[in-house]
Image 1 (tube, rainbow, N blue to C red):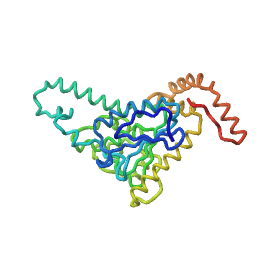
Image 2: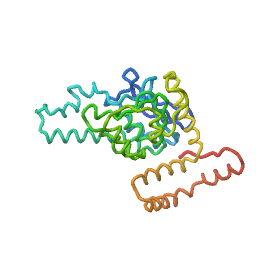
Image 3: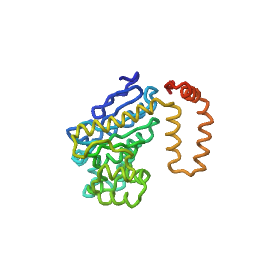
Image 4: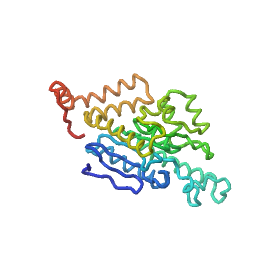
Length: 297
């Protein structure tokens, strides 16, 4: 399956179109457990900006290539190289004025934050299909997604505190909003302990765990969770794109706002969007017991 306007390819982000209206983005650096280097997060904004506005795409699946990891997080070796911006954070590096160091680091951190936020800002639903390791930056990535599924053998870790820093590109802001327990959030963030798919399900970090035993084959586990995500996506793309994107927009807008504000914004939004032909088509298809057909948005 192809899209009429495929996004620019990236060596570390593989994009395929396995079903009409569905894009599958795979983090692809399997020999390094899909650990992120600078070109990888830099490729996220243009890719998700394209997918967000491409009328041929209605839903996006995000997964990792290979059998061992969604992503193991930041490539610490690459980040520790002398030419890395992280080297500037070394207090023994005295060649640069501290204020100028801070200014450079601030720009760098906010740039990476914006790369992860590109997923959250995507106008189409994004579902994370997590298998294997999902550590550090992996948690930043999945908490920016709309829906999260995991394989039984998936493992999660907010790892940053173990390398001497507070997670700074999304987890500490988004994770508390994705789950219901502030105590649990502090538990995993302050200890950097590894937790599994069942605990993630119990706390609400993921909404489903695919079938199969935790000791099952890694490739089978990855295939099962991707297929679970694909089945969910196939159901979503059959619905009105006006309704789907509107629902995501209204849920995201109300994330940090009160009920009255949300009601008002919803009313204003639907004052325009209720004028779509999709409402009549959905109702007519239901009465005629046939599959509804919706135009691209």
